[in-house]
Image 1 (cartoon, helix red, strand yellow):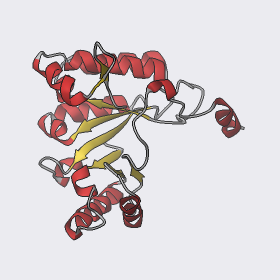
Image 2 (tube, rainbow, N blue to C red):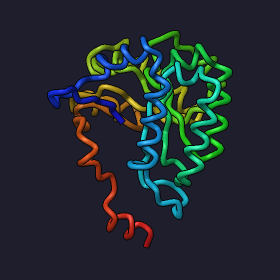
Image 3 (cartoon, rainbow, N blue to C red):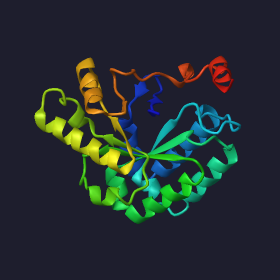
Image 4 (cartoon, rainbow, N blue to C red):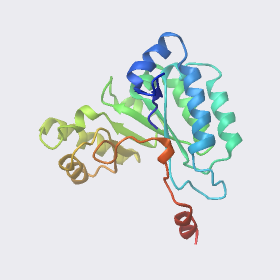
Length: 225
């Protein structure tokens, strides 16, 4: 999910504009709570009869919310209330937020994984990357920061970094996601390196939730059959 706002003229306002303001006025937790409620009630796969979700909705969480004492309680209540199938929700936590709240984040992940949620470590490589703390985080996915992806097909150092991260992920049973994939050349290179997932403009452009149709009902029915 990519959060956007509209101003009084109906123009889109990017997160680089409104999130700093939300942080300044201590509104990030309120914003995260609103996003979680909307996502779980309006957009997530609500087929509770299925053993696992037909699609996974990824939601970013701020470090501010993770530091709040009652935030975990709120998320648990929301997830239980909706009775979503396993894997319907994946919470994304940045590397920086995970490091600064390591014990709290581990507890947060463990509690929600018991309810069928997945976790992704976002922007890996942008902060104080360490495979030591990664061993202690029960993440399902690791997203390699786009700074290593953009020139992976041309830069031998970037290629080596991506390859090394992916090898460690495979050994730990973590699936790898490449951020900021913007060309076929990069996509092909990542495929060659064995990266499981990719996101970026080459894969798809951002679009409104009004056009969000991740799985046709007829397709779900045929898969059940």
